[in-house]
Image 1 (cartoon, rainbow over the protein chains, first blue to last red):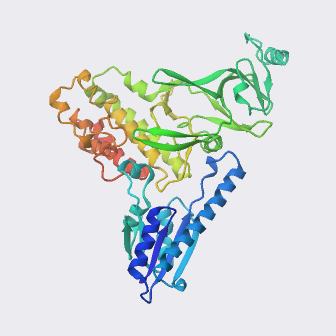
Image 2 (image 1 turned 30 degrees about the vertical axis):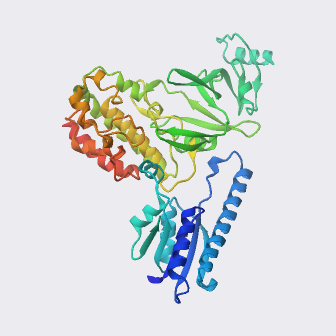
Image 3 (image 1 turned 135 degrees about the horizontal axis):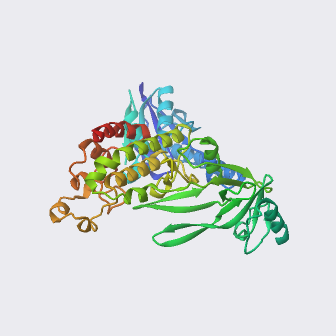
Length: 150
Length: 320
C-alpha cells in the first residue's frame, strides 16, 4: 500500500470536516501526496416510504447531499494548499450492509496506505444497536494506517 | 348496503347473526371507517369485521384501527387483516429513542419468505381494488412465551434445572429463525417479549409482527440481537429483576449490596442482567452471554451466529 495515498472517509457530519481539515494541516503543500475523498452513499430502504416517488425524491436528495459534502471537503483541502490535481473526490453507492466494508474495499482496490475517518463518539448502547463505521474500520483494516479524528 | 352484507352472511355463514350489518369495502384506504359488521372483500374473498385489535400495555388499551379481527366468511376461520398504515414514530428502547417506520410492504414480504415455516406466524398478502397491500394473518392459538414461563409454578432452582432446558432448546430454534431472516436480508425489527408466542397443542414457539423498519445502520442486526438477549435474560431469570423487586423475591441486603452498575442492562438501566449474583448455580458460561447485554459489556454480538455459538454449548451444560 502506498503511504502517500490518503483516503478520507466522508459523510455529512462535522467529524468528516474535522478529518479533512486535519489532513490539510498535516499535508499542506508537501509534494507527492494524493488525497482521495470517498463518500459512500447508502440510499434509504424502500420500506421507509409510503410510495415510490417519495423514495426517489429522498434518493436524489442523498445524492445531492453527497456531492455538496465532497465539494466542501475538497475546498477544505485546497484551502490548506493541497493542489486540486492531487485530490480525487468520489461518491459510490454501498453495495452491501456495511459502509465500513465499502470504504475498506475501495482503499484496497485503489492502493491507499492511510484511511482518515472522523468519529462522533457513540455510547455503548448505540454501538451495540447501530454499530460504528470508525470502530469497524479500525477493527478490520489491514496493511494500512488508520487515523481516527475525534 | 347493509342488505348486501346481510345476504352475503346469510349465504356464506347462515349460522352467524350480527347486531349490525354494515358495508362491503373493496378499498381499504379509509380503514378508520371500517368497523363491526362491515365486510372487506379482497380477491373475491369476504372478511367480516368483528372489531379493531388493541395493544395492551401497562393496563392501557391502545386501539390499532388498521388491524381488524375478522371472520373469513368462505371458511368460517378467524383472521386478522392488517390494512395499510404508514407511520414514523420514535421507538423508546430503555434510554434510547430510535426513529421507527411501520412498513406493510416489509411484513408482506416476510410473510411470503416464511410461508410454511412454523417458527413464524403465517399469512398472505393481497391487494385491494385500490392497490393497498392487505395482510391476511392466521391467528395463533396460544400465549406469550414470557407469560407461559412466569406462570410455571416452581422455585427458580427447580425451574432452572427442570423447565429451562426444553425452553432454551426451543428458544435456540427461535434464534435460528431470526438468523434465517437475516440471511435473507430481512430483520424482524420488533423482538420483544410479547412477540414470541407458544402455540397451544404443539408447544411451537412462533414469532409475530414483522412490520417495523428502521433507517439503515452499520450494524443492521443489532436491534434484533439485543431483543434476543433481553428475551434470554427473562427466560433465565423466569422474570425481570430490579433493585426494587429483589426484597419481594426473597433476596436480602447481603445480595442487593453486591449489585454494581455494570450488572445492569445496557439499555434498561433498572434491570439486573448479572443473574449469577442472584442464582449462583447459573453456569459462568451462560451468565457470560447475559453480560454481553450489560453495562459492563466491552464486546457485542454482531450476528445471531455469534450469539448462538456461545448459547448452544450452555444448553448441554444445564441439561446435565
